[in-house]
Amino acid sequence: MAPQQRRVRCGRLTVVAATVVASIALAAGPGIAAGVGRIADPPTPAPTAPATTTPAAPATPVTGLPPTTPAGMPSVLPAPIASTPAPGATASATGAGIPPFGAFLDSGPRGVARMAEMSQWLGGTELKVAHTYLPGNSWRDIEGPPGFLEPWAQWRREKADRVLVLNVPMQEHNEDHLTDAQVRPLLRLAAVGAFDRHFLVLAQRLMKLQAPDTVIVLGWEMNGTTYTHRCGPDPKAWKTYWNRIVRIMRSVPGQKFRFDFTPSRGRDAVPWTECYPGDDTVDIIGMDSYDQPTGMSFDEQVKEPYGLEQQVAFAKSRGKPISYPEWGLFRNGDNADYMRRMLAWIAEHKPLYNTVTDYCPHGVWQCTDNPRSSEVYRAALYGLGDQPSPVPTDPTPVTPPTDEPVATPPVKHQVKCSPLNLGDWVEYWLGRKICVRLPW
Image 1 (tube, rainbow, N blue to C red):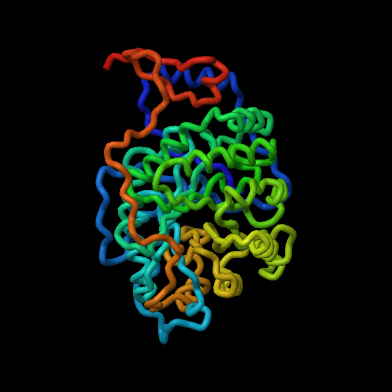
Image 2: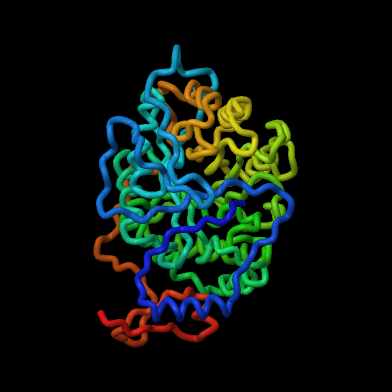
């Protein structure tokens, strides 16, 4: 469960168009998610606008470009910890058992470049897992904005044993704090196929980029209250919607997508077991687990209802691997014991992959607020040459037909004007799209 983030939106409409959108937004009314007592998990990193070109990874850590940060976080983070060998650093007993790992370093091309820099800080230990998030402002975002996925797919194609993890929202306006009364009809529309085509477009784009085995973290932290794609307002409709999305994306020839069901740790707004859509459409059972609430020990994080222990048992009973797409420090500050215990937990239970959230207050490399935890993390992972492959997949990249067009919604009439992207839920109730004639 994450607090709202305000993503930057490009202004592409005239004042007239903006007025129309504002009027509709006011009519719909703003939504405010109700809290349920549990402290919110840290924010999901806000995707950055894709650059026109992918910069090459610099030889030394970047110090002047902070990662994308959510609202409320400082706009400029401290420079990454200097890339100097840890005194006497070797592969520790904990590090020797660490499964394939990565870190969230930025949503855009800078995140790709920084993986090489973090690897250098770790004495050459390779980050085999790349993790990014599709923005959730509009359906265009969720389909994969032009230029956004290309650098990530290119990184994945360079080595056969790499894995790309992509968080995919299930609804637009995903962090606009819609109320349960607003979310419930959206889930019911979704359950009957109102939004199917957007996920077909995304699947086809990933295939064109030759990323057929991408891990899709679909509708993450659905057991909370923050996201529009949450489960609580109508679990039955949510599960039906999840199953529709998976079947649609799996229908694309040549795909090998794996779908990761990832709640936040603990009960949160609803028990995450009530949202589980079924073994047929879930490949991995993940968990976003940060060091919080304040004062909670690691043992309590393991034993709490719907905590780490229950995740492992639940996955084992279904013959599924586990994962930790998001983990890191949080409410308890620079907690070296948490870092040590979480690394040991990962080494013992061997998730398919794990990615630490590496910006303040959660991180260990780009954030200088956690020196003791950073030392523990670095010592555990320093200088590990041979690591297991993240996912047992066919190492031969699948090359889809180059002439296969990406599916787009049918257009009944060609109008020389600029369509307003109001979202399917608004257009559904209006019964049509709205188009504004512009001078250009």
